[in-house]
Length: 418
Image (tube, rainbow, N blue to C red; front, side, top):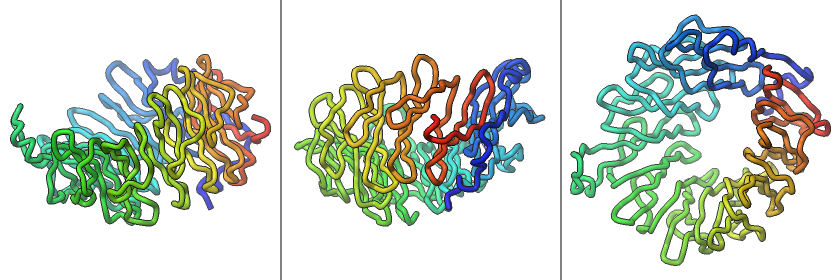
């Protein structure tokens, strides 16, 4: 049973908070953030000049800080925030502060089940990561990017392991970057490294690496593919396996490779690869002709191309359909299996399939208002702001989290009434 099955799907409309009252009470309001089930709305508020705190459903935290950032709700509807006061950074969970404090924290990330919290951290002069308040034993000169394992037990980050003076190209060319998993670095060093990702079983990490002048590769647990390549893009693991898929650039063009071997034909560019839920199909953004973008599924591109951009492919739950946000002639829209919607917008967010895969919805912006679009048809109601709608488990209703008339509402609307 999905988590959303336990939400309230019977109450048609609930006024959760009057944001107009908040605007009268506070100097500033930032980062409006609803919980997944829509029952709570939080924001960073400024009750007095230079002091910030959080407000949840009109309840204001009594403590104030010089900065508050990165609001997130976990599945238990606890509010997580990064706070800064008296030169100290800390995390708060429902206003309970972590005992551990830091000189800086960033890349706040929840574990896959939403129960754990990971961050990159700095304890001057060293950097690393922490998971649920537990800091790596080993810290480093620099740390960038943060990955959390699917089981929620491990963290990985790209770390600078070798010091380097300004313009010291000789040290740089020997390699100064690698990946550390729970603070333990790989044996091998690289010119640069980015995009770490864990395997489904949480036992392996893959990342993009630079190994020389115009030489790039994919490293898995520190071991590179047979290469190098002219360029690489972020890898992913195939579901339920340790096979790694990544775009590589070769003299023939750009293609997708698995474990270093091309598995598709060649294009001008390939990236943002995604597997279907069952792991049997693979889709990616491709450029089959110069400055023409589209989606390819298992290496076969859609017949329709677009002039400006194509974002990440989204598979339907039944693995048979693919949708993507596309930009054509400076207007945003959604295309499904190569067929674009007729309606175009100023902005569109990732499409969402219904549980039975038959209906596609998307949040879209037009002329400063936000709408729900169902199978290409624009909803009757425009909102001041709107978060991504959520299908009920039977696909017959949508949970709408919205700001309308300066008030935040939680609404449940039948899909045929949108």
